[in-house]
Amino acid sequence: MYKVTVLEGDGIGPEITREAVRVLKAAAEKYNFNIDFDYALLGGAAIDAVGTPLPEDTVKRCKASDAVLLGAVGGPKWDNLSGDMRPEAGLLGIRKALGLYANLRPSKVFKPLKNASPLKLGDTACFDVMIVRELTGGIYFGKRGRFERDGVACAFDTEEYSQPEIERIAEIAFELAMSRNGRLCSVDKANVLESSRFWRETVLRVSEKYPEVELSHLYVDNCAMQLVKAPWQFDVIVTSNLFGDILSDEAAMISGSIGMLPSASLSSGSFGLYEPVHGSAPDIAGTGKANPLATILSAAMLLKISLKQEAAAAAVEGAVDAVLSQMRTPDIYEDGLRKAGTCEMTDAVISLI
Ligand code: IPM
Ligand code: MG
Image 1 (cartoon, protein in one colour):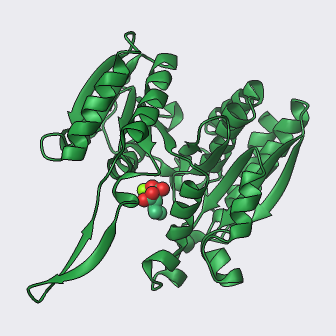
Image 2 (cartoon, helix red, strand yellow):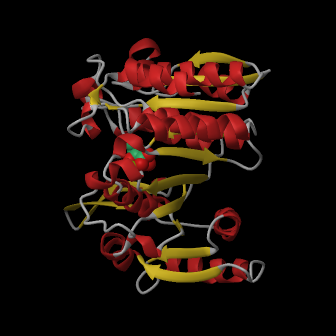
């Protein structure tokens, strides 16, 4: 019996996690295993219920499970709260509390959605990139503050990385490159930042253990450009927390469908937290229009990485691929296909499993 804690969060979070849970139940039944679901509060929902974006009880429940499935957090209702009381603080807090230092964000062209990409993708030009973002260090967690100098108001944030922090994320990225096409690009700003020069040095040292992997380095500004110029040149990208945040949004957009992209946040061992790359979309919450596929694909990553149920994961992924040529939610709708809502799309995925 596996245990999965569900953090529904805000906006469309409850709707899309509900659908992903239905898919997980169907996969479990088909492949003969059991999942026990537990629910806990995070983000705005937690602020409303108990006055804090990350209740202690939530951390405890997550730690007692094999994996966590997360919807999304945030919304206009909580936008005026101070930094550490915002829903986003709950998200950063849970990553840190669970030690989820490795964030895997795949972005690829789903063949049936090729025309949705803002790039002109020829028949052969496709891409399939895995961004490995360091998730519990760097400027997100460095010292920050406000001060006054000569009567002028100032603010600062600090980028800091330790050698073990860089080594462990580099190792995850090299391992992933080995299991894919053998290419790893490390992204930094080593022409300016000391922390980036240290990042590059450390990644180079780790690379000695992986002679089969072809390692390259790019400055982050150049990488941003290369991603729109020729995204097919990339296999795995490894980078810091802040650069990974920015580049993963860019990579998601060029796939044409942020509503399709899953992510996994991992610690050492098999425990992980899985969530769609998109946000809580408060504007369409409750309308039944949200695309559930990114969360369903996140559930597939959960099956594969944390529960080691590879056949079930493959079945879910295959069902998602197949459903795209039958029906679409509005975000990815194309003429000639059936228009579907959140539930209908999930029903179709389940029947294909
Ligand atoms: C993400 C988000 C978060 C981040 C925000 C909501 C704090 O943009 O998961 O990419 O910056 O990490
Ligand atoms: Mg982001």
